[in-house]
Length: 392
Image (cartoon, rainbow, N blue to C red; front, side, top):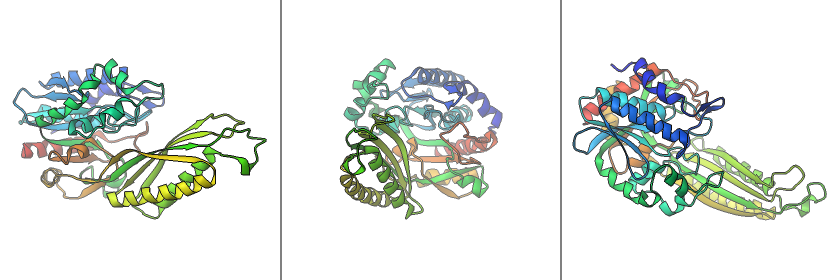
């Protein structure tokens, strides 16, 4: 049986990478990411697996048997100042599962799952699935002005070879992801782990509001083109529209203001909105209504508004056979709808895929306060092992 101590031993070498006073930061294509890759290679060697990297930077630990293989894993990158279990727990548990399985099982760590540096969530799995807009992402710049193409090259990933990653999908027979629950659903159910029925639809909107810089003291209110005041109205509109649907969640997740000075009316605002809903239709209704209402309010404020869809992921239902195998291994058939995005959801339309979540007593994630009991994680890992034995 997989025990908490087994998972703690595998996590030990990874937890310190990118750990600071404010939490864990392991952004893609950085020194911390490279150190996580070295940890991955060491874990692969300990399991008798061969470490490889595909053209998108996804890390594979594969058995010495012909593909296709069933695989288990998640990701090792993090958000800024995040927690120590998000993604990392799934990869560590994947190695423990692969080490104990009587079947040939691969371990996958997907590149840039969080999208925290370039707003490119599930980058690696989308490249594998052929769903990555290569030309767009390569020209994106991070907060320091570094183009993604240059960051990839510096990390040893050829930007020109990104489209070749899709061919590696043929190596997969199916995929199971283990992940921390990022809600209190399992805690409320009193279960240490649970299978996921589906992922909610998700979108990220990138908005730019263009006003005019003016003196904060001498410019009368009816003469202003205040980009930040207009952005505040858009935020209130977005949240109020979501409040009408209890299953819709909207987060104003990031805001950049120019010139960001004490005595100047803001001239430009960049705003990102994260929205999620149980169905594509619910999310699309919210987005179209927001676009119409926001256009009206910003025009009245003499501010120009540009809205772009930075990313969009449709709702995804996982493979019934995988879900049944996980339910049998867990000993209960209760299933969850997960509102977070995951690599397993990107692969699900193309390969049999599933997920199992680990109880999170507080529901806190993307935060250094994120916490799980590794005894619960061991229950989840044992269930993945049992499911893969049946599926493979």
